[in-house]
Length: 515
Image (cartoon, rainbow, N blue to C red; front, side, top):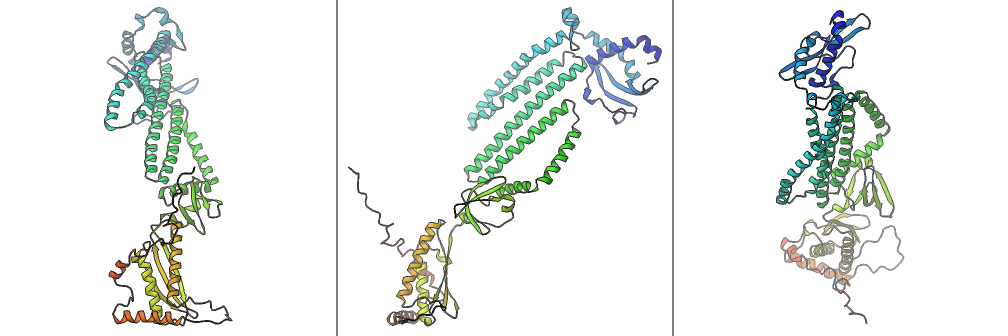
C-alpha cells in the first residue's frame, strides 16, 4: 500500500485481514520462515514467500509476503498487494458465514486470551462429546474383536491394554474435527493444533510401546518354551532398546511440534554419542559380544563349557559378562567381548563321550599272545551295551623301548559324565581281568629298578592263549584286522552291565512300615 493509502485505510484493512486470516487461513504458522531472507520456495521469486491459502466458500486467495525496502527500518516483509486486492471479496464471504450473529452478545463481545468466550465454551463442551465418541468407537470394535478372539483362541487382554491410547487418539481427532468448524483465531488455533498434535503423538507412541511389548514378549515366551534361552534374552534386550527408541522419538516429535529447533539438539546428541562411544569402547564391545553370544546360542544357562583352560557351568549370560561356576566352586566372570573371540567348547552338547586309553604290554609278549589280548578286548567292547560298536578301535600302535603299546578307542553311549565315569571304570577293570586271564601283564616303567624275583609270564595261561589263537587260525576265524560283522552283531549286549554282583542291580528289600 502506498503511504497515503496506508494512512487512510491501513487500520481498516488490517482489521479485515486479521478476521479473514483467523477464519479462512488454511495453512500453519510453523511454516513461516524465521530467517530474515526467508526460505527459498520452488517457483516463487526470492523476494516473495507463499504461506498458504485463505479459503471461504468458493473464494481462494494466496496469502503471500513480499520483501520491500522501508525508509525507516530497511528490508521488511509485508502482505503483498495481490493478496490485498482480493481481500474485500474474501471478507464478504467470511462475514456471510459468521456464527456470532446468532449467539448472545456477551459471549461474542467478551474475550479471554484473544478468543471469544463462546469459542472457549464450545471447546470445553466438545471434550465430553469427543470422549463419548471415543468410547462409542471402542464399544463398536470390542464385540467383533471378542468374537474373532473366541474363534481364533486369542487373548483379548492385548486389545484391552491399548483401549486407553486408542480412546485418546479417537477423542483427540474428534475434538480437532469439531474445533475446525469454530473459526478460531489464527494464533490460538496454532496453539490448539500444537496441543492436540502432542496428544496424538502420545497416543501413537503409547500404542507402539504396547505393540512392541506384546510381540517381543510373545516371541520370547515361545523361544523359552523351546529351550532357546539366548533368543529369549535377546528379545528382552530388543524390547528395552525399542522402547527407549520410541520414547526418545516421541520426545523429539513433541519438542518439534512445540516449535523447538531440534537441529542443534540432534547435533549435540551426535557429538555426545561419539564422546560416549570413545569413552566406553570396551563396554560397547561387551554389549555387542553379549548380543552375538545370545544370538548364536553356542551355550545356554546350565551348560558345562570349557573356556580356554577353564571349565565350569554357565550360571548367567548378561549384557556385560558371562558368569561361570568352576569345578573349584568359584564364580568366574568373563567379559562378553572376550567370550566372543575365544574358543568355547560346550561339553553339554555331546551326543556321546569318548573313551580312550593306552595299554603298554611287556616286551616279551609273543605276537599270538598279543593277538589274543587284542581280540578279547575288542570282544569286550563289542559286547558292552554302553559302547558304540561301529567306532571301536583297538590297535597295536607302537613297539617302544619299554612296552608294546595298544590304543583303545571307542564312544560311550551317554551324555551324563557320572554314568560315563562308571562305564569307564567297568571297562578298565574288565580289561585288567582280561590281561590277567591272558597270563600277561602291563609293562613296568623302564625307569624303575626292581630288585626282586620276577616270575615272568604265567606259562600255562600264556600257552592256553597261544593255543586259542592257533585254533582260530586253523579254522580261518582269526579276528584280524577285526571280527566278522556277524560276530560283532552276536556280541552286542551279551555282557551284563552293571554286573550281577552290583548293588545297583540288587536293591535292598523294603523293610515295610515302621511301628
